[in-house]
Each structure stands twice: as C-alpha cells, then as structure tokens.
Amino acid sequence: MPVPSSIPTDSPRYDTPTIVLHWMTALLVIFQFVLGETWSLPTKPIHHLMVVAHLTAGICLTAVMMFRVGWRLTKGRDLSKLLSPLDRMCALGMESVLYILLLTEIGLGYLWRWGGGQAMSFFNISFLSPFPRFPTKTLQWIQSLHHWNAWLIVGLAVGHGSAALFHQFVLKDRVLERML
Image 1 (cartoon, rainbow, N blue to C red):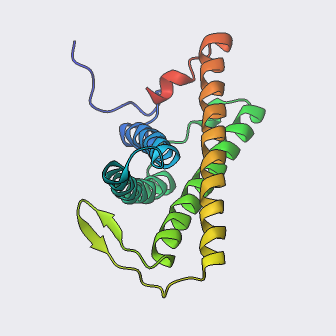
Image 2 (tube, helix red, strand yellow; image 1 turned 180 degrees about the vertical axis):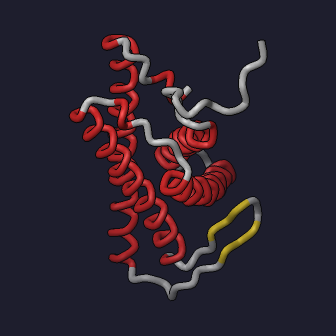
C-alpha cells in the first residue's frame, strides 16, 4: 500500500519540511562542530580545506535556519498541544533557546570572519566583508564567544536528543516518531 504524500492534520507527526529542516540542521551542526574542533590538527592544505568546508556549511546553515524559522512561524506544524503542560514548557523552551543560540552562532561566525578582514567562502564564491577590520581584542572576544556558544549548542542538543530517547524508550510515548 503506498504511503500518503501528506500527513493528515490529526496525525501526531510533524510535517515533512519541519522534519527535513530539523535533521538538516542537526547534521550541519555536527559537521560544523567537528570541523571547528579538529581543523587545527592537520597540516596546512587540509586545514585550509576544512576551514573552507566550515564556511560553506555555515552559509548552508544560515539558509536552512532562515527557512526553518520562516517555516516554523508560518506553516510549520506545532505539536506541543499533545504534550503535558510541563513537557510543553520544556520543549518550547528548548526549541527557542536552540534557535536563538544557533542564530547567534551564525552571526558570530560572520562577524569573526568579516571582522578579521576575510571573505566568506561558499563553493569557491567569495562574499567580501562589509566591515572594516575589527581590533584584535574584539576579534578574540568574538572568537571566544563563537567557540563557547558552539559547545553550549552541542551540550543542549545532546540533552535534547537524550530527552527524545528517554521519551521513546523509557516513557514509550512515541515522541521520537514525530520527527522521524
């Protein structure tokens, strides 16, 4: 029997764009984090490729997040009404915090790169800095914020994933199936 192309409105699943955007965001964040934490290990040519891949993925994440926020605010499915009041508060709180931190991380990445007088690179296309070069102390501060905000995002995302697994396998309330 063929699978219906759209989910009925009474289904306890998120809509397809929400699911795709969620997992695209997760994969890009993991990719970005791994690159950012390991690019100092290899030699210069590989290091440069990792930086370019990080910049390219960062621009992709920017587009995904802009579309994701727009979709969420207009047509995206909100299933929080299926949750208990406490679970609803926790889920919406975590979603909001992660969105804010991700958008902040993106902004810090652009500021760090452009503030250093360097172009953003996207598949060999360069986006020149719209700013004059920032003072070294300012760049160090932005870099530090970018680094620690990334760790905060990953920590919260691990908590978010752990909560989903707890709901799925301990509470057995099928929460994880909504996003699969």
